[in-house]
Image (cartoon, rainbow, N blue to C red; front, top):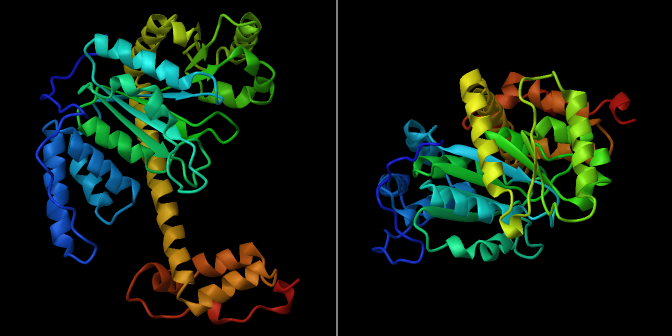
Length: 374
């Protein structure tokens, strides 16, 4: 049984707490924004929901204060348990999350929900379908729901989802449910985010899993066959069992296959019992500690890669040498490998572009040779 944390009373999302401090403009001193962030974090740690929502927005927008937010939260992390739910569109993921949330609340556990929605082609924002489907939980102070647009992410989750999980963890949520956009060859983000990953399939997906067998077995801790009352459910379950037997012996966790009818609330109790069993297995074997350590390591490299790319992209707009090199690559005058080496292999150049204040030149001053133009 997962222990409930003793949290201070939280404001329901429909209540009207005292107005928060005014968000400072970009022109105001950084120290003012820092003070505001500290105040918001303190209020969030005290159980208030509105500061949590504002901090999430700041992290999503990648504001300059975002690193400070995570830094202040870090001593308060590690108590929540994250459950990822992925599967094909139309498989009933949102319904499963809705029913699982109701079960968790009956057991006295607080819940955070991150629902990754497809981005609007017009605004880039989340379409927010999940907000409509889960509206029964919106007045529950023990549930916090956040829909997030995937934007330019290709792995089923927005880039900031990991930081949003940290915020919900620090805010005192016992369980965090993370629903992804869909499952596919690039559905790897959820594995680097959740403690337990549930892959939800429906009978109609029987043929589709043939091309996804290896990937599905790699990411699934638990298989759920939803809409199990439909034709083809038994066949799909049999195929999943065969896949499981072929993998048997590679680790000590035998991936369970749970049949559900989420819209009828059938199989939800069995699913949660299985989630608890997987958590116990991870904790007792030390695998939970290892997974989380690996997640933190991978997140470090992702952040570094993102920031380096971001800085170089910004620099290319104002630095004629870098802009010229990018143009040479676009015109097939220099191959991408040579261009990348010019950027990364020379310390002076890297310092000049990535570290403000450096003014020394580098090998990009060299014109492209004849052999690089063909």
